[in-house]
Amino acid sequence: MSNSSPRSDLSRFVPYIVLFLAIVVVPVLYSLGVIDIAKVNQCGRYLCFAIVALGVDLVWGYTGILSLCQAMFFVMGAYAMGMHLALHGPTDGPNHDIPRCLFVVSSAVSGFSLPWFWKPFDSLAATLILGWLIPGVAAFIFGYLAFRSRVRGVYFSIITQATTLAAVNVLGLNNMLLCGTNGLTNFEKLGPIDLRVNSGKLTMYIITVVVLVVLYLACQFLVKSRLGRILVAIRDNEPRLRFSGYRPLYFKIFAFTAAAAIAGIGGMLYSPQNGIVTPSDLDVEKSIFMVVLVAVGGRSSLSGAILGALVVNFIYSITTSGVTVVIHQINIPLLRPEYWPFVLGLLALSVVLYFPAGLIGLWRRLNGTDDTGGAHN
Image (cartoon, rainbow, N blue to C red; front, side):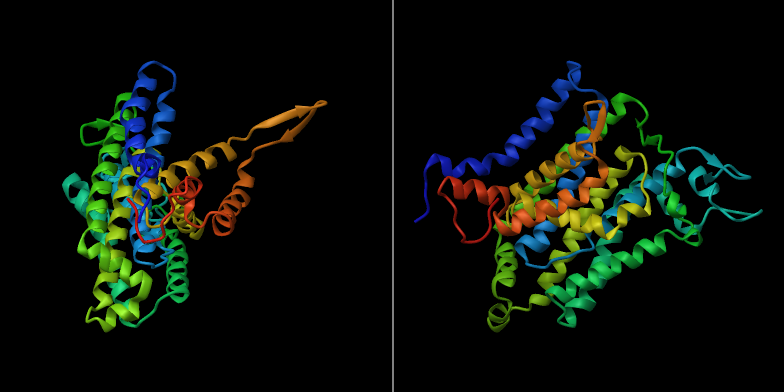
């Protein structure tokens, strides 16, 4: 029998605590002048990663598929929104219809016109659809080809990582007409929202919170449904599920596609709050970083995915803050950006060695309420 003590349910309140902090505490602190708009904007970007973490948890935590290309889907959404923002920002060219970030990296001497694939993103409605549809379709095709060939386990992870590395190199080419390594920038307005003023940045933060809540509830409904139980069965014993008459292929494609679409949504919200999106956001390290978010928070726990995203990102912020202490007139770097890969590696090793169920699992174990029976909210 499961432990029904009040303490056993504390971890279930994690998403509500995060929601309270995001909706109430952060805006109140900003209105009182305790934190500035830069901190609010930073929190908004971290919540974008929490959105991506929900998708990673769905495909890895619940379905058991370790995908190392989530950053690629994230950047697809970010570039979709970035192209729309760039089109509605400063423009150059003979007809003043070329986004400045594209015009300055163009090698064309004359006759340069807006590439055809930029034009659909002039519409905000089309952008909001394409931002999740493009990564979703890409994941569907990739997943169908891979899963149909029975590629799984570490081999699937290697293939997704190699695909991400190839995408980085392709996206950085100026010939792709996506602004090369400079990336997309000069973001000024998103519809009626002026991204240059504090009120616009606060509005984007609130939109991100709302989207996170909606996606969390949708994922929670999914994992509690019959479909969610099938995904867990694929993770735990795929051959037995196949023997029972199910075709895991289609369920795996669904999980992989859904995670990609969710990552695309996170990317769309990230671009206007970050102010720039470049091929460096597609680095292999970023996909590993997204997996670590879920691992630290706790696999098979949507609450853990959100918690891990926030905790790891705040650790990143602290580690890269560049704090230096002075001892006997000698500057000693205490925290530097160069230390972050080592901190990230230490976090990953700590999860593997000491709390494989993440922070949520660690809390349950310390309270004597750990159950290994499957998924949590």
